Image (cartoon, rainbow, N blue to C red; front, side, top):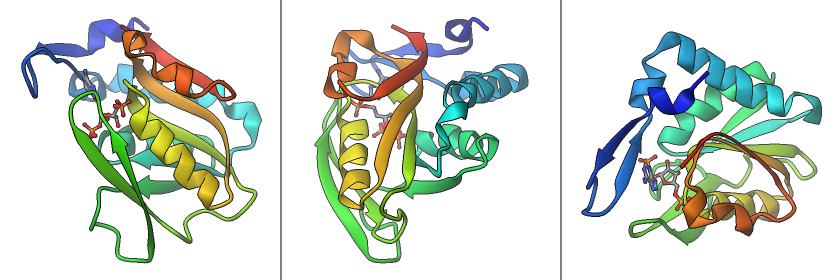
Length: 170
Ligand SMILES: O=P(O)(O)OC[C@H]1O[C@H](OP(=O)(O)OP(=O)(O)O)[C@H](O)[C@@H]1O
Ligand SMILES: Nc1ncnc2[nH]cnc12
């Protein structure tokens, strides 16, 4: 599958100079969506993943179906103030701006094998914050699966010991 042909690039969104990779065009295409989920899941099928962790909001659209395919649980990583239980809070940087993420403290059991799934790896700040939270809860991050990797932002360099699978590179 030529995934790049399914991803719409919108210049100057949300701020001037950003070339926004819009995955809605891939998600709405039933064949591309199914193949993308299957490809990410297949890359980690031998890892005995217990839990897929996905950051809000686009990480839900990719992470939850990958978890289903891997027969794993799904843990949402949310922006502050959204999760009702006791949370772990973590601040991080984006390609544009800053943000913070939270996860339920009881979402991961020590020793669980965790796969992080998101739509896009840019600076790696989101994925790194997610990995740090997983590790603080005792989980073992065994990989990172994304639809899109912005290679020029070198997010991959933040994960020297982690297998990263991306379906489309820019
Ligand atoms: O590698 P990074 O530089 O951290 O950037 C990648 C993150 O940025 C986007 O999320 P965003 O925070 O825009 O949230 P959204 O999914 O709710 O739109 C994207 O979905 C990734 O989670
Ligand atoms: N260029 C980009 N397009 C879409 N989502 C992003 N998140 C961070 N950078 C992005």
